[in-house]
Image (cartoon, rainbow, N blue to C red; front, side, top):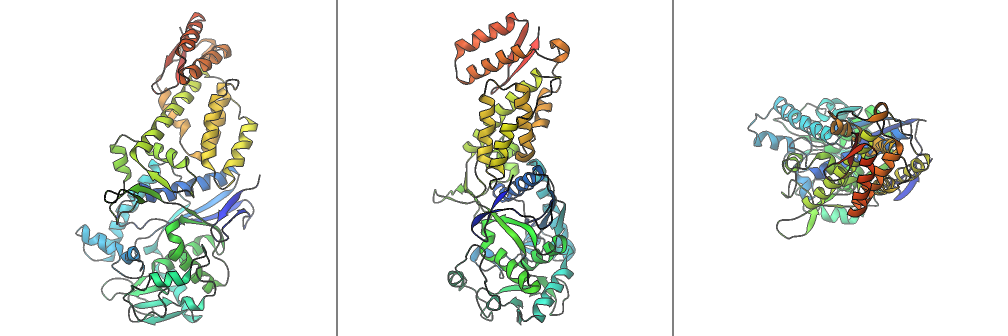
Length: 486
């Protein structure tokens, strides 16, 4: 079955065609590790993980790279000037009272890199083939800047070496950016030496801190780091480049410009971007992008302190398409938590009741699943399909369980392990060598359907019928059940 992906570059869905048969090279823009990521940031990695799992489900081998920006990301981006302001990592050093040294910068970067990995594990996100830290790839940045200087795409002014966007035909083609508007939005820049407001830094001078280069001591530009690292580990072009939509206008267009100018070929064939997680502002009572700079964000630790699981947050994200903005609220995540609890309770009931029975993956439903997930990761339809399967009375519970666990290879909700934990320690008093008779399972399923429909009379009648046959049925909190022999 074909895989169709929405390509930001062409603004259309395209059939995925890998550069190498059976292999996918994927680069995901990672965090700047000057602080803890918030749950809005983490949507990009749930999206990338779902994309990777979809490829793997379709029997592709994925070489996934996530970069870690631990130098060169300037704070001016919040005002529309990504090449101005203080380096975010030096801001972290000031905040934490550490010395202004490269060693201290690497140390604080490691602290927040480790916390980022911790968040990924909490969300059951598969770790990439490799994390690449910008500070470990300075020579690669210098080499790439040298190529651009020699080819006439760069010029030097008092504060650094800049890419001349007027020399690159098609600048702004990702997302069909209106360059005139982009230039107008950048006119607040204080750097009057730049040839054009859209020109961007390849190397920034800093006499006190940084690395030596042919142009002077300093730091690589934020954009050059991604180009150098992605090309080193994936080649050029590679298959898929992802990130959040705020990276389209400048960061990703700048990556494209410098990489294609240097090597005369595309950087990546497919560009994919996730929408924001929005949150209600405390000041104007409107939904806006979750942001550390604006102070309206929720960290993973905060979510957990409120009694919500990271898996529930992942489930909630999957109920919206990755290209659709998601409006965060605690009520919404609580609702996702309740739904996930009901799902796990029901599946745990199937698992307890069908011990010793190997279910089969239902081909018709697997085909539906593939048609949804291969259509630009339509996870909302997949989640709905899971609940539809649970409602169908004439499907055997063991088959329901096997089919939904197969889908979870892509959904990444860790259902199999959660079921094991839920059922751990349950005594196995079942008849027939640990297997509940099918007719009892059918009655239990019908009773569960009656409970969900609040048909309490029918539910009680079915319980009595089950008990008369020599079995007990025990309801679990928020749905689901366990059947045991008396």
